[in-house]
Image (cartoon, rainbow, N blue to C red; front, side, top):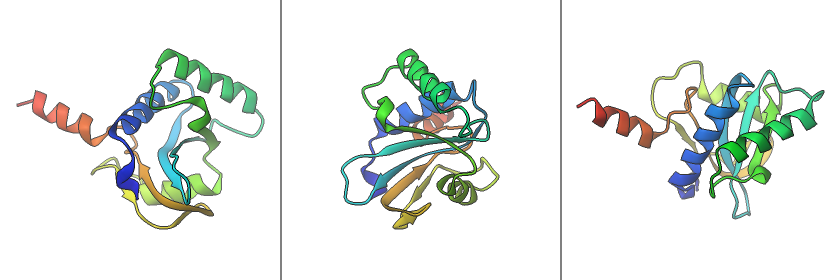
Length: 140
């Protein structure tokens, strides 16, 4: 299930998304756990990512990972995709147009035509529950 994703992976994905968003305007970022696997895959979707620039995008993925190294995220886990891809469109629909609320733990068995065991969908500002708690505690 989606609860099995490690807090460290969630934080590493958020850091990557914040850095990657400096070049590619984000539509949505999320993790999925494909069914019958032990791995989690990270997705970052943007209208700025098209089929015309895959090598440039991958080089930018590597650059961001090198600038923000984490043992919890490697370049082979990162899928930088167009917002028009089916999985991105579905996640955008689930995420909705608001930043209100918490990140979403998605428990359905399919997403964008991919069989999954679960997914974690970031808020549009990539704030994680841990970061929100830390911010709220620092204001008290």
